[in-house]
Length: 103
Image 1: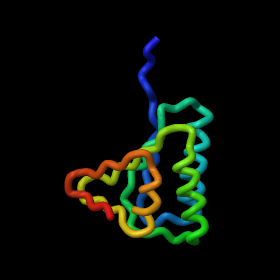
Image 2 (image 1 turned 60 degrees about the vertical axis):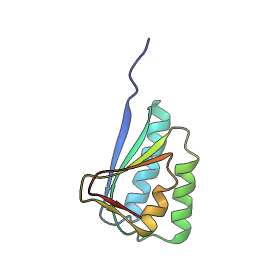
Image 3 (image 1 turned 45 degrees about the vertical axis):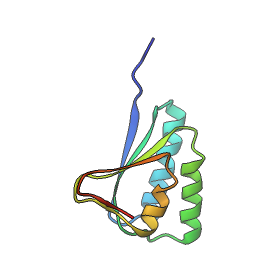
Image 4 (image 1 turned 135 degrees about the vertical axis):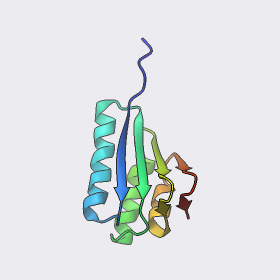
């Protein structure tokens, strides 16, 4: 049958701290285990307050995931800057809402 793909969505707002980083990793694991069509990271965050090593680990987890991972900077007025922008650059594709900023 042609079942529609189901995607998991994770909202990331405020600072990316240890709790948010762990949640992203757990969400990737859950998407892989459930047979999800992929994971969408809805991002409105301008700063990561985790170590550079942790950022690299998380970026590797994102880029090596068994399911596609997409980032959407939105809604309008949202920002993804600095380390957060570098982190979501590891996703398979990035979309930016009209009126949002990425970079």
